[in-house]
Length: 203
Image (cartoon, rainbow, N blue to C red; front, side, top):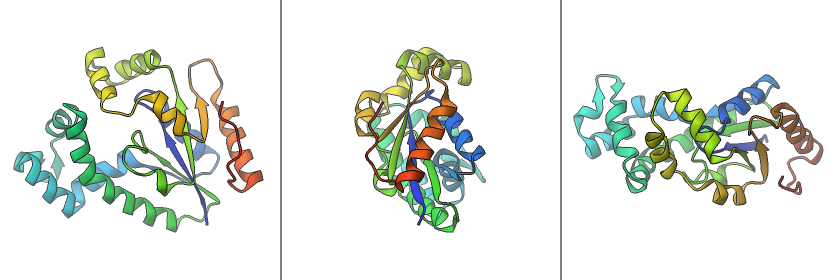
């Protein structure tokens, strides 16, 4: 059975970069954000629940009304929890099925809200990509072309980084100065040599 690596981190932390490094070294990665978007459009249960919550305008034919959904989700953590409660159980089931089809000793699940969405029990190892908050906000502003206020609002809907850091089994530092590749290789080497056994100290 494959060792399941959970990969998380706040907005702008660089999870996607680490995911690509995993892919380069041959580790399949389930990108929960991408799969959640797919399921949100095509899963009949999710469609039914979102229409009941937000009305018919949340969909236009086979297209999700992303601005409408985003305005609801990012308005408050409580509203984000409601939407996550609809979508993430379906994503969880989809991940289980996907992981069962892989023939690799390691698989990874990337999710910004892995802990908050209740995915911690789905993975064997929790890896956090850790970046100071100011750097994360600047990266996200540049990436998304939005204001600091908008990014800070999104940050507030996610678990505090320091709280999440305490739950992580491993940390990958992505501060723009610490090289990423050696950290990823060190993680995979350790897990390979110890068959996923958790005894590695956090950085």
